[in-house]
Image: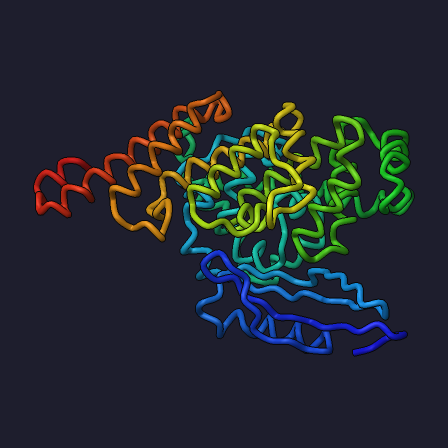
Length: 399
């Protein structure tokens, strides 16, 4: 397609084993988007599917923009280590507790069939009433999620599952009412755009009750993000708009980044494809240390700013999400390097990684978890070595 001497090309790409592969090329964006959505049900090897728009100017300069990205549910199931299983959720006493990192982690897992295809974070979902209506039309995901959490928490404080479900449902209703109130009250507030964040915040604090203002400010940001479908576009806009603002703005950025990091595959997309899992983990550690730089090949430039915020203690939730991601990656059954499948190579890489982690306190409160994860991988590697020597009984004991 050509508009005023500019040409457009639309590539449909799939992610497979850490690489993006071109599947189709179109001249019309509608055809490309339609094809990408249909491939969710047909491309079994795809871990994710995206559409990239390439715009070429008359001088030959080409820019690209991501129009759509879809995580495939079966691919998500293969990446279980990236979202911890919901076998325990911190007890929520009021609806405010539903905004905690642990509660949002559970939402990411339990509501993934909706959040994944829609490219949404739990924070966005909580703050936009339109999403509450949409998810209701797609089944009973929320009711199912609340029931699972109620069942896990049955017995706490003498609660039974049914009673706990009613308590959680009442909290969810309180959040829905807040989101609906924002839609009604926002008619008298300026609409957030790329340049007026401080103006919108000042108007909200001037016109809205103090107990509602933090929710409204976050809701304004989430409504702004509705115009961006691709997760990378959202995160880039967030950093541009909020990273240089006040601490309250950075808290919003922190929540949304933490949500995104918990989602399967996102850290890989942020860092770019790595040769091995050990390299991926090392890059995560560099982000936590504040050493991530623009020279990182394949990485996202806006991650540089987030890396500095994390190392400075200004994005604690995003930092904790990366730490948990590292713990799950080490605990997983994924080899540290598929190119060197022998257990001896695995053990060598494992000890190098353990030494790198031990150099400083980058894992913070998660150090105990990472120590257990490293020990588990050591035992598994020792078992593999014993099996290769034919010592099956000793191998079982090593586990």
